[in-house]
Length: 312
Image (cartoon, rainbow, N blue to C red):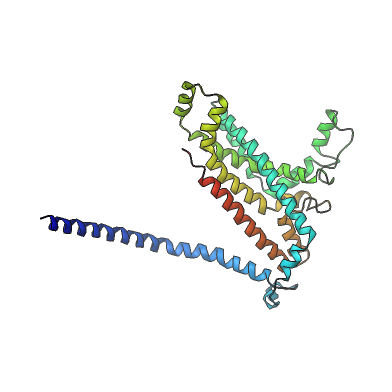
């Protein structure tokens, strides 16, 4: 009797296993065409970038670039170019400073919008406006605001008695990079605000009520409830924002063009200059390959932090 029952159970389990196996095969077969399409769209351009980066020489006709000999000359030239390392340093300061200040502003506004204040819905719409403005338009707009002769910012500082004469914010080497960071921050903080705000609204109110009963301070409530709830989404939006700032070229191109004296030349602008000013496609793609590696490292770091920051 027991042997017969065991056989029946085993047969039922095998049927269930076969059912799940068939479901898995069906699921994989349904996503396979889309997965192959996505992999093709990713891997083929990557192959082209790496292949072109290994082509030594310069051609005016891009269609003949595959006729050039293979080698690592472009990478050697890039890694021994002081202007490349200058662009690396500028990118680190530009991305790091912009993302840190953007997150501070976004977090502050998200905490404010999370409170039950009148006009919150209108404020949320207004916060989105900078994100909707194209980067090149934003760059030109701030170029006029900070203009040394007609800019409204200099006029305000003169009226307040802070400046006695107009100051060339985008031309002076000491302030050029900070001036470029201003429109970048203005464009970046809305996405951070909305992401953090969504995370804040998903935190159960009961946790704060329990903390109030236990006599927790504001700092303890922020550290153990608020920050624990927004840490994971914050890592995600910081990764997306950092990668976006790292690869964008429009704001820097629209304000300073990399000047003065390469003071604001990021890696993206270095690639643009090599490719379209000097027609050195091999050098440009070599830097592009380095940028892909750096972007993957940034993504991996933020992903590790995000996975360790799950809300408990």
